[in-house]
Length: 533
Ligand code: FAD
Ligand code: SIN
Image 1 (cartoon, rainbow, N blue to C red):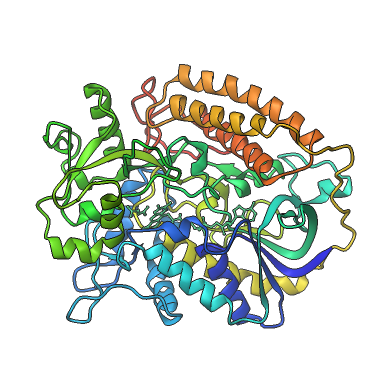
Image 2: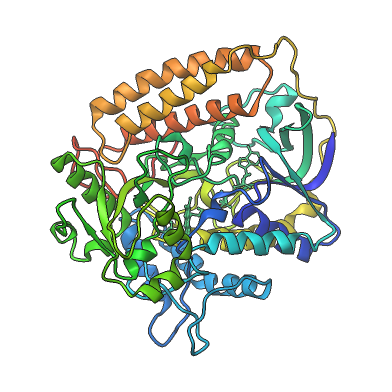
């Protein structure tokens, strides 16, 4: 049994920033961070555009950032949460700059603030087109400076430990479920270890891998959200899956799909159909810089009308030196597949990008389960509503990372470590003989979600998806109960839960709002509500 004061599951922006702030406040507490591959691999690491924060108060202010976030969220944001994140954001960004994060500056020494869809001002701090890499590097380096932070790589968290593991029945209506830590698979020894903790933090990121085409790395399999649902905790708004309008169309296919940052459109690039004609003016007066839900739907519509597999992003009129300075990574990637962005149009297609819903948390990151907190992309905090505003996600991770540390500092001394936790029971299981069952089920799952629960939905498609998901669920549960556990099996099982949650939430929302568009209900309700499961 591993004992620690605080167990953090996830080492991206939310998990690591929390660990650092907590370690700084309380040097007497032990903090153990689990990551399922290496610490560098996370959605955080792939962020391109940057961090949105009100920085230049001569032209920008909190009210504008709040209004843009509420507008993108299409009536479903919690305004008090939006205000809190926007107002605390610049302080948190300043702190990571003090930890060593670099953001690009102009020749006059001021930050070079970029623009993305839905933002009324330039307010995106960025490091070239690899901002996430820079933030992850900074957090990794900073975390190493604390003796009370232990990072354990290649540990795959499987389930939380609750009263259920002590023989008590818990249901979704139980008001007093408590978390005592988690079981995690040590991928090197293939043994499941028990981690007991006074407080557990979930920062496991998003679930993009549930779709065939996604910008998310393979770690993004929604493990934390699925664990929460299994532990009978509250999950909400899973129908709001954000498709980024512009991932690079690569006929060879790649997982993940490479992102062409929205900042490229913020720099002046224009969306066009294969015949070279602009089309975004037909959908929104902000044209190529409208919020993501609008742009992705417009592209999807144009592709369907014309029977095309992609649309184009035209960068050929842009300043060459400026483009190379801002987007060196995107330039190199395009060149590697034979496209010169300053000469050729870039073929782009929408791809699943961000999970707006997730684990319900309050303003301090507390979940519905006692002594269990969550932050970052795995949560539904009220910030994003029905559609996330570009570059608000890294900001959310930082703000909630800090807030969780402030709350836990106050309460942790009154929480006892549970010592009476049983070890994982692997009796009656045998080694899997046919891995093809897992790989094929995963393919089927992605196919179902991409065909029936994508950008545009209908009741018939949602029902068809759910019928097929039940079958996959039954087959996978048999494997889970009879074979020794592997990361592949756990990810498949988690992704099936995620697919179920997305589809059920989509069925329950009898309107079209933000990222959820159902042609059977094209109108919006006059009132708004979360889809709580
Ligand atoms: P992540 O950074 O994804 O970290 C998850 C961590 O959890 C990882 O360490 C992983 O190993 C661990 N983990 C997961 N499951 C388990 C398990 N079962 N056991 C143990 N560990 C586990 N947002 C912006 O604000 N600005 C941008 O410019 C931007 N660009 C983006 C570009 C791309 C290509 C992508 C994919 C996303 C982008 N986003 C951007 C979104 C943003 O990067 C993410 O939402 C954010 O980084 C999520 O941070 P997180 O800490 O919640 O999760
Ligand atoms: C991008 O660079 O386009 C991604 C920004 C984001 O997802 O917030």
